[in-house]
Amino acid sequence: MQIQHTPITVAIIEDDSMIRESYSYLIANSEGFEVVGAYKSYEEAAKNFLNIRPDVILLDVELPGINGIEALPKIKKLLPTVQILILTVYENNETVFDALSQGASGYLTKNTSSNKIIEAIKEVLEGGAPMSAGVARLVINSFQRNQNSPLSKRETEVLENVSLGKSRRRIADELFIDMETVKTHIKNIYQKLDVHSKADAIKTAKENKFI
Image 1 (cartoon, rainbow, N blue to C red):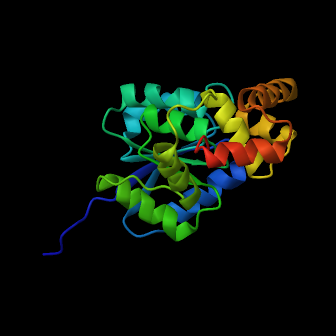
Image 2 (cartoon, rainbow, N blue to C red):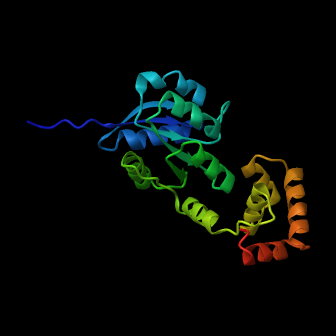
Image 3 (tube, rainbow, N blue to C red):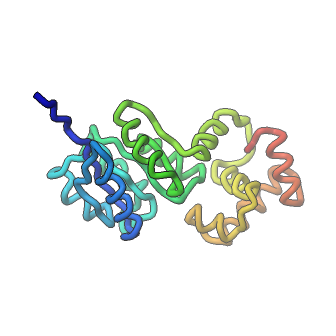
């Protein structure tokens, strides 16, 4: 007699219809998987969760209405045993740590290969915590930082992004803050580190393991 294996059920919450459909196609056409729902917002998905009860949810961060980070504790309250994989374009400290602290089981960026996404879904169900290479590096670096840094959490994040060569506009967009706030943070960083240039700020921060 042939043994019937129960498929891994997956729900997707992603507001971009093309990306949502591509994830659905990928997972539905992978052996041993079933897509039980694909939604453009948390609000739409929440109406169906108790009916579909997925094993794993692929969750975007930037969603209309309640965003992915805000949705995490709400989902875990509705479905305590569900595994949630963040799949997003955002790869900055605050977003990563907010997601992990709010109950995400893993964190992948959207340039992750199809095979890696499928493997990550299996991995979270086996107790793993799959992460993209850049995200894993952020997590490791956070444990190696000087805990006596004069910089605030947000200032540290801004300076890290500056050190990666990102423009002020991009930093503002990725951290969901305005340009003036970025400028204020940079001014405060210069004052706290007693420097007068971006290069000196980065050098001082790296030498002292502030970033």
